[in-house]
Image 1 (cartoon, helix red, strand yellow):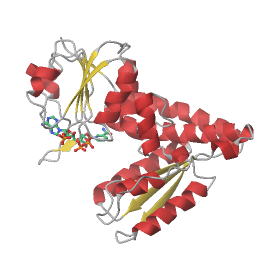
Image 2 (cartoon, rainbow, N blue to C red; image 1 turned 90 degrees about the vertical axis):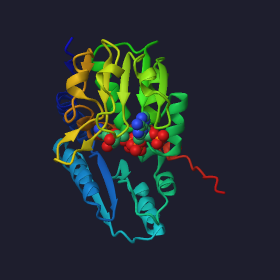
Image 3 (tube, protein in one colour; image 1 turned 120 degrees about the horizontal axis):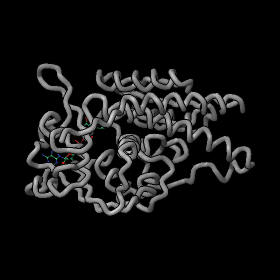
Image 4 (tube, rainbow, N blue to C red; image 1 turned 30 degrees about the vertical axis):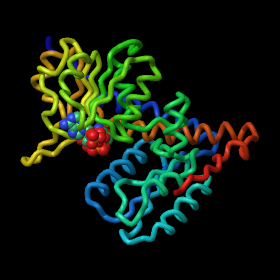
Length: 303
Ligand code: NAP
C-alpha cells in the first residue's frame, strides 16, 4: 500500500480563498478584522514566524498590528501593551510570540490576553474549555490537524488515536479535541516505555515530539492515518518531520508530508480564529450585548 497524501498546502489555499469572502462580508458592515502580534526581543526564528503570520494576514485582508518590544522590556510594560490591545476595538486577536525572554513569566502574560481575543487558544479559559468541549478558540496547530483528518473522510468515533508528544500547545489539546469526538485516545511522551507497543495499535497516529526519524514503519499499523506535526532542521538544512516518511508511506493509508502538511495549516487556523473573533464581536455588538460579551475577569490564584 502507498499512502495517499494529505495536502495541507492545498487545503490551506482553499480555506484562505474562503477567508477573503468573509473579510469582504465583514468589510460591508464596517469591520476590518485585526490581529496584533507581539514580539519581545529579536530571536531570528521568532522573527520569521511573525513575518509569516503578518504576510498571511495581509494576503486575505486581515489588518495586522506588529508590536516589536526590546528583549529587556519589563514584564509590566508587556502587560500594559496587552491591556491596551485588549481595549482596542480594531484588534480582534492578540498573539504573543513564544518563547519570551527569561525575565517574563509566559503564564502571566498569556492570562493577561482577553479571553475574547485569545486567538492562539492558550489562555487557561480556552484550555479549560477544551476539557469540557466548548472552547472559544481551539489552539491553531491541533485545530489544523483536525481539519486535515476530516479531509480523509474518516469518522474518528471509537478509533484508536495515539498522540506522541504531550506539550501544552500541541499534544495535550490534540488529545482533548479528539476525545471530544469520541476517539479512544492514548498520549505518549518522552518517559513512555516501549513507544512502539502503543503506536502499533493506532488507527490514527499523530506525532508531535520534535525528534526526526522517531516513527519508523515497524511502529505503524497497516492502513493507519499518520499525521506528522514535527518540524526539524537537519544539519544539511533539510526540513523533516518526526516520521520516516518514505518508509511509513508504504504502510499508512494516509500521511502528511513535511513540509506541506500541518505547517501551513497552523497559520491558516490563526486567521480562522481571528475572523471568528471579528464575526463574534460584530454579532454581539449588533445584539446590543457588548458589555455581557466583554471578557470575564479571571483572577489567577498565585502562591
Ligand atoms: P515540545 O514542547 O518540545 O514537546 C515535545 C513533546 O514530545 C513532549 O511532550 C515530550 O515528552 C515528547 N517527546 C520528546 N521525545 C520523545 C520521544 N522520544 N518519545 C515520545 N515522546 C517524546 O514540542 P512542541 O512544541 O509540542 O512541538 C513538537 C514538534 O512539533 C516540534 O518539532 C515543533 O517544531 C513542531 N511544531 C509544529 C507546528 C506546526 O505548525 N507544524 C506547530 C507547533 C510545533 P515530555 O513531555 O516527557 O518531555
